[in-house]
Length: 435
Image (cartoon, rainbow, N blue to C red):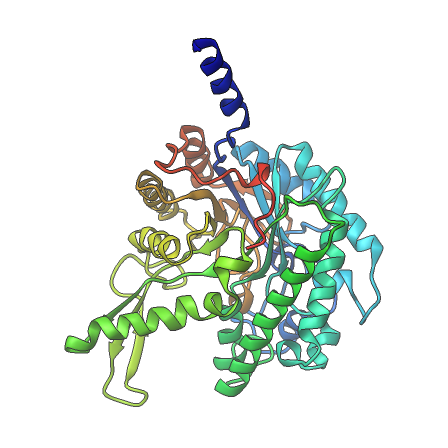
């Protein structure tokens, strides 16, 4: 009897899911760091006078397209186990229906170089920039956008999910509602509109594109079944002030609008295998005396070079709220600070990772932390001036110099984090949920 019980325990132990690894890393995006950009709405935007705050462009950026090894060697030196990058749709499909295999070959070589350095690739299929030809047709509001995007996603995932550089972790879009706000409400990003109606159409286009692409990938029997699909979502905890007894309702409504609308529209708990959480701060909704009688700010606190308030506690709130809402494993896909002097970043890292630690100790399945960014890169409408990198970049010479915070983060990686009280499943060793 004892022998039988012992044998049974061995069988159970051998079939039990492996504990989930905790992914450490950093990353960037194609337009922000590759240099030598192809024709996109963002490349056109940077060539229009007055569009970029410091008058710079992304022509050289971090030179990742020409010299990826420099970036990847630093990631390995850091002790990273995951590196996030994106695919430039405009390189892969430079004209409607014409696929550039040479561009995909190059991405395949970059991914293989990552794997040789022990880095797990996490790939975002769309990180803000659209092919120029699609922008000409209306961009996110074009009737054909969802279908075009799904075809692009299928083409790239089919190609890059196999071979020596194979990608298992995917994100369809980066910060979809930030893209809508910047381009269609504030007019600060392409296409430069300030129209609530067009913003609504753009958001709906992104919802349709995501759901259509995910459905196509889930149904593709030729793809590996351990692919993990997500979005990188900008989550900002919301507080309210000045509304009296309505403060709780205003905070709730702001949270639904800022943090939940897109995720509810794509049925996040059904279409995603995990959720990428991008965190940079909180939002305070205040009552104002003038139309539209609402003012938004970030509250009090130390400010970054961009004037953003550093609020580490908000990351813990974001993780708790996202976990309670969707029950998915969470990956901090972006978290960083514009800090050229590097005076804030060491304590910024310690404080935000303390929030990750507390979340895991509370049983929230946080499976990784990716700092934004490894190296200084092009910060959209702000240009090259903001410095988010653990590594300082001389944009003239291309020279990279690790900042003191690079060593701080490396030491934090070596210290590691405790396991969660309720481990998430190891997503790499379980089939896609097809939620």
